[in-house]
Length: 100
Image: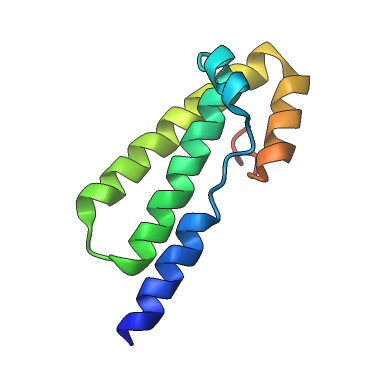
């Protein structure tokens, strides 16, 4: 049974390969799109971690904080530039909030 957990961990770990090149990372670290992309990767990593460790309450708190930060950035972007917002939502495959 322990082998299944280890295999699942490695499969999940390898699925987070960056879609952004190193050059783009260096140039655009302050852009909203880059920040949302990083938060989304962190959210996916924490979610898979919490599937294995259901009682890790500190990670749950960290996940909620990152979700809030990403939501604030997405709200700012949607108010500022609707086209960039829609493109980013489609690229990352995340849902639009209900209260929008």
